[in-house]
Amino acid sequence: MAPAASRLRAESELGSLPRRALAQYLLLLKLYPVFTKAVSSGILSALGNFLAQMIEKKQKKDPQSLDVSALLRYIVYGFFVTGPLSHYFYLFMEYWIPPEVPLAIVKRLLLDRLLFAPTFLLLFFLIMNLLEGKDVSAVAAKMRSGFWPALQMNWRMWTPLQFININYVPLQFRVLFANMAALFWYAYLASLGK
Image (cartoon, one colour):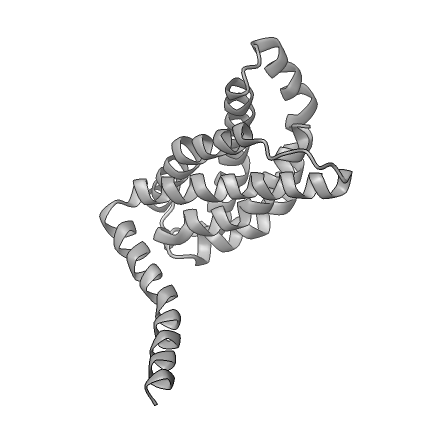
């Protein structure tokens, strides 16, 4: 009887692990919103790059080792840029275009798609290339060749996601929602760098 009871207790503790993790995340989000979003952005950005590297290895059937420096670049970018910038952008949007403003849904989406998306993508190209140690001429060449296709793909992929995010996801979870979707987006952007 004792082994069955201990097995049931262990199974119930495993079930409570996600609840405890969520409760801890919510507490950290409340106490340290920018830091918590920065950390989760750094981790999820690196995970997106990791997925991109795994996909590339599989497609090329290349046994090359993991590019740890790329993972570190994505951690740095997610921690210092994605998390904090997204946090403040969503706060600004909530303040500047509150939900009760006429056509708020459309105005928010246009602000995000026409102002934030190009600016954020420009920062991505600039910072990532500088973190790779490329000079200004190489950064400019990369911008000329990759920015417009990446922005077009951004508009296609992110417009429906951001419509949901900025209009229906609670403010405190918008960065996390975007980070989860960004796993695939960063995989796409990383593939442009090769």
